[in-house]
Length: 157
Image 1: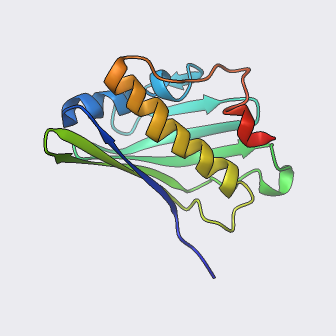
Image 2: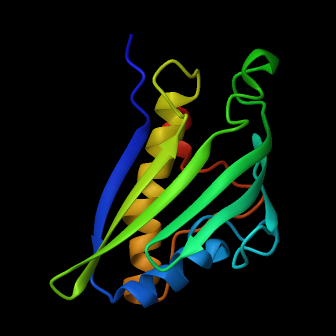
């Protein structure tokens, strides 16, 4: 049975410190509807959209690696049976300098093909990491979402 965690990689035209700062600016590339600190080790923040509420704790915060752990989640897109799929999963950002640019490898550890949300969630993460985060760092403008938007509507149709 396939148990591969979701991951994606993007090469960003910026120094590692700028990329590190960009990742921590979660409101700039994921959503303005974030409550709490996204820049301090052991702090917690809450992300909300129309279908998902997730409480995340920052468990590692170094210039080379950022790790978020999902403390609690409520995903109503697929119904009550799958509401807690993200609980205990981790989002890992690994930064590697490559010829004046920074490669970011993002892994959602625990987001596996057996999850009901795997396709929608992995497509969403791919968009937010390879497009929105990259755009925020390289141009100063990410593709973040507001509270009332459905993230990446075409993925939900």
